Length: 242
Image 1 (tube, one colour):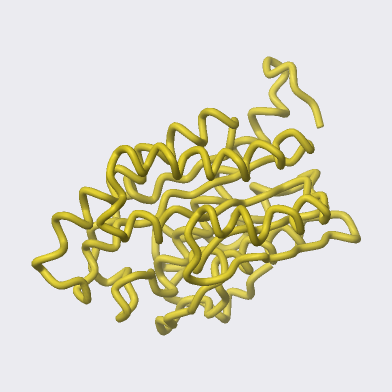
Image 2: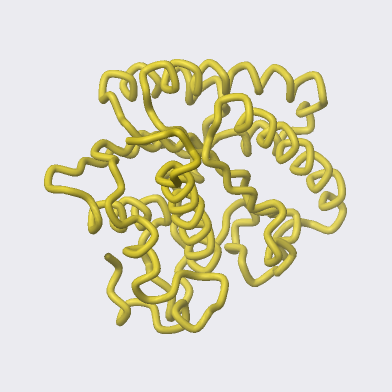
């Protein structure tokens, strides 16, 4: 559980978690081994914003899961900044499978989409590289989660001359990410469609990442999505039990 004293501005932000919201949403969750695979979205720099929790957003999600889990909860973040999807597959999948997570968050594709070579044909190839990651984790029994990143073309640090083409590639990435998530029954968070995606104050000065405010929103959206999946599985009409 993240202390309220660490995030006064965040608690006043309606897009972020209210105090105690994560505990309520995740109460009684079944997950014991949480793995994160990916690029800098998984394990990258933190651009701090006053009044917002300074933890990396994936670490925040892990902290909230740990606070509501039975004893023995474990968390491993395999992420490495700067990787393409195929590099995440080649460098992290084997170790993640050996870890045997029951909840796996996979975060990649952004570095592919930042390249001008990310055409529709290349996007289909990236989809299969992502499937090479999601498929084995799914077959091993992990609950999968994915996130489509905020549209960083709205960052003031992105030169105006490049914004439109970057926006088009990121829209392509978002479309393909939704299809991949549906294919593997992932808990999916679509930050590209978030109402704050066009807010330039969400982005770090490097023009490639969000800041602590966008991290707080991302953590909130994933925790809410996990909570919704738990509620659906516990529904008497779902036919699913954990």
